[in-house]
Length: 178
Ligand code: ATP
Ligand code: MG
Image (cartoon, protein in one colour):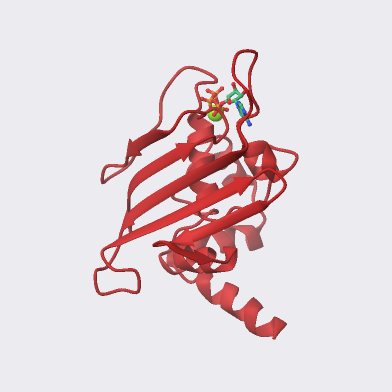
């Protein structure tokens, strides 16, 4: 799976619709303090199903919606769209498009290739592709130190994500609940 495009609207500091192309290879984000570098990375994690508001540096999930400034009103919703190149013979065809949208008071809704899906369906899409909201491929601030300080069980989870077997755990939890 190769990420191709990220579109944001009303997400944190990205109040106006913004679109970024993601080229093959390693991508770095540079810019002055407070310009939104971490917000961008958080947008990628968020559209892949991040459920922890704390890891989005917020008190509640609605804190990802543009909160307004002295000159601009707050937004009612935030939306992030991620497109990825996928195996044309796989379940999503050549291009996967995932959209997550949150509205004040209404929670999050997800779409995969235009179809409404549940959060856990989105988690499975990315877990099977060895990526996801907790993917070691996304290196955010403080992450290196966290890997060094991690407990062995936490480090095992990182290795499982990287090995692409994290999807098995999602399915096992699902089966155990039934
Ligand atoms: P640094 O180099 O310091 O790590 P950064 O480029 O990573 O900075 P971010 O942390 O991504 O910057 O962006 C911080 C900015 O995003 C702050 O100005 C903050 O006010 C703004 N911001 C975060 N959440 C919201 C929100 N919900 N509404 C409006 N602005 C927001
Ligand atoms: Mg930052």
